[in-house]
Length: 232
Image (tube, rainbow, N blue to C red; front, side, top):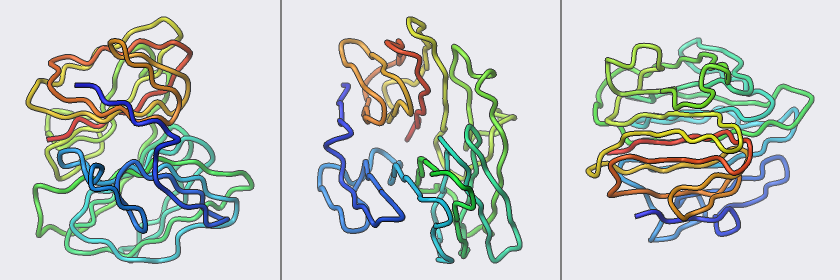
């Protein structure tokens, strides 16, 4: 099954400094058909104005992955972690037993991020934060694992859940495959470009919910940057 969720169908709100689109029910947006996809709970498409951001606020019991599409985001938390994650890079915050953090766009340009929340399968652990670059050249023509709950994904940022976050950059006409298995669910969003899976076309920022496929074959119609969550 491949279900297209067009960008124009997403929930959300424009707060002026923040233009947020929600692939799943979040904050004031609730759609009983879009509460979660397996253990994937949130996929927000956030556009943050220069010099603004999210002031300190708490989280617990959630794996929060931030994929920076444009600009940069600066994180600071009550554990003493502070870091700047720029376009193409990824940060992971395991909220664990509780963490308070802020995220600001300290840049002179607009920042665009995907923020992805996955329900943990391990709890009761101390919170943590990490960030690392993922050069787009390394994922040219293939899926590369950015964050993973599995110990054999050595180069990925660790998350405490039965899931992976992967990404690929494809030139127009290129195809990449991701073996997922029919017992798993996938949610895919092209950050840029346009792609096709079987007979379904997805444009930039559309969501694609996938289940009951052994292998996901993605063909780029235009040069595309793709992010995918492999969920339990």
